[in-house]
Length: 259
Image (cartoon, rainbow, N blue to C red):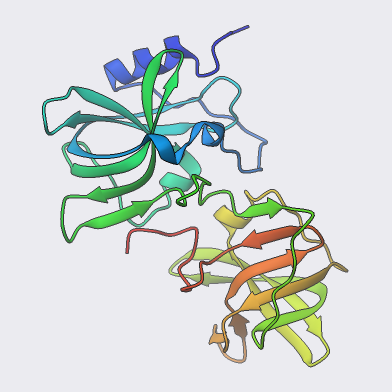
C-alpha cells in the first residue's frame, strides 16, 4: 500500500521525465477534487514561464488522471510543478496548452510530501490577448465540481426561477457535442431545461430522476434547437439541499473556458 497522499515516487519521477503515460480508471463517474482541501488564498501567487512538460498521472487516493504542467519560471526561479485538474475536464476546454507555450499561472502553492505544487486557478496562454483557462473559483472550489450540498441552501426568487416536476429527458447536439436536457412540467406548461454537455453532466455528483421536484434559475428566454425545440439555459438547478451550478451570473458556462 502506498503511504504518500500524492504518490511522490510516481508523481515527481513522472514530472522529471515529462513523458509518463496516463493511468486509466474505468467505471467511475463522480467528479472529485483530491487537492482542493489544500488550496488557500493566503498562499496565492502569480508567475510567468514556459511550458517544458505536460504529464498525466493518477494520484494516490484519486479516481481520475490529473494534468500537470512543468513551467520554467521566466525569472530564473527554476521549474514549477503546476496541477490543472482532471484530464476529463482539462481536455474539453477551448484553450489548449502545448509544450513551449508561454503561460501566466495564478494559483495556490502548497506542500505535498515536502514538494511544492501550484494548484492552478487560472492560466493565461501566450500572453496578453491569449486564451484563458479558468480552473478554480477565488475560493479555490474547482469549476469541474458543479454540485454543492448545503442544508442552508435556499432557492432564490425572481422571474427567471422556474419550478416543477421532472417528467423526462431529451438530448440534442451542438457542434457535434451531445447535451442532455430535462423536461420540466410547471404550472405554466412544459419546458426543456439545459443540463449541460453529457461529458460534464454525467460526471457530476447528482442523479436526477423522473418525479424529482426542481427549481431552475435560467436565462430569460429559450434558445432554438431545431424546429419547434426550445431549451432554457440553466444557471443553477435546486433540489432539496443540493444545487447544481452550470453557469455563473454572467451566463458563462462552468464547463467551457478559454473563449
